[in-house]
Image (cartoon, rainbow, N blue to C red; front, top):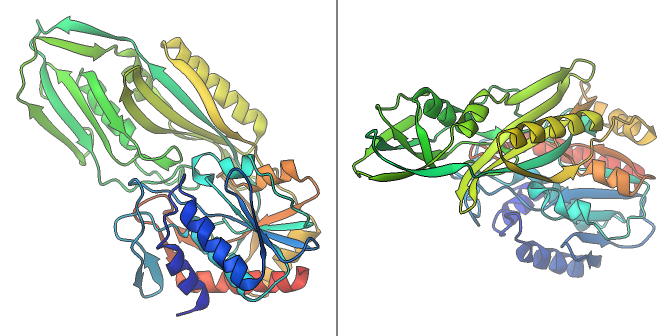
Length: 428
C-alpha cells in the first residue's frame, strides 16, 4: 500500500474527534522523536514539528475530525479507488493533509509542520495559536477539490438563540401527542455543499409542524454546527393527525393522554418555517457562493429551545450585516441571542507564492486554477496573525465531508502528494 494511504489508515485508528487530543499528540511525539524533529505543543494542543528555526515553508493541517456519533473511530474501507468509512465520517478532512505532512517528515525535509486542534468546532486551535512560525510561505492542505488552488475563503460566525416562551395549559381541546422524526437525509458541509440543494432536516420537520398546526413540546436535531442537519425528532401536540412534508418523515402517535401540556408559542415555528436558509447571494466574479446561512442544530434544554445557525460570507462587511439582521429577527420573537466562533474572510491574494504553486500544479494538471472557497479555512486567521505569510491551500478530491457518505479518491490523493512534494523541493 502506498505510504500516504498507509499513514492515513493508521491515523483513522486514533481518536481524533474534536476535543480529543491525546492520541494524536502522543503519536506525533513518537514520530518526532524517531525522526529527530523538535515537537512543540501549546496550551490549545496545537503541534509544531521542525528540524530548525530556518525553514522557508510551513505546512498546516488540522488533526481533528467531525464525528456525527460521539467519540467514534472510523472503520477504514477501501473500495477500488475510493476510501470510505462504515456509516461514519471518514476523517479525510483533514487526515489526508496530516498524512502528507508526516510523509514529508519521514523524508527528512527541513520545513515547519503545524498540526492545529479543534478546527471543526470553531477553529479553536488556530485562533489561540501560540507557536513560533518563522517561514515565509504557508501551504495549507485542507482544500477538497483536486485542481483547485485556494487563495481566499469565507469568513463565518455561529449564532445561538434560546427561545423560552412556553406555557402549561389544560388539555381541554383534546390534543393528541405524536413523535415526528426525520432521518436518512444526505447531509453535507454547510459551506462547500450549501448550494447543492441538500435537504435540511430541521426545516423539513418544522414545515410539517407548521402545516399541521401543531405545538412543540420537545425537539432535538442536527449533528454539528458546520453540517447540514440529517436527524431531527420532535414531540408535538396536534388536534388532527399530522401530515408529513417529506417522504423521510415518520409520524407515530403516542398513546398517552395528558391532562396538561407544556407547549411553546408558535412564534419560533413561524420564524423557522419562513427563515431563508441556504444561499443568500452568489459571487459571479469568483464563481462561488457569496453569502449563506445554515440552520444547523435545535435542542430542547432546561432554559427553552436552543437553535444554532452558521453564517458565512466572502466579505467581512456582509458577514456583519447577516449577523446583525439574524440577531435582530431572533430578538424580535423573544429569543436570547449570543454569537461565537467568528473568523474572518480571507481576501483572495495573488502573489509570487500562489503563482509558483499554480505553475507547479499545471505541470501535473493543465486545468489547475486559482479559486476561492465558501468555507472557513484557518488560512484567514494565520494571515491575520502572521501578515508576512504568503498562503495557498490545496488538497485531493474529498466528497461529502462532514457526512456519513464522506469518501476520498486514492488516485487524487497520490496526485496531489506529488504536487506537494514538488512544491516542497522548490521552497525547502
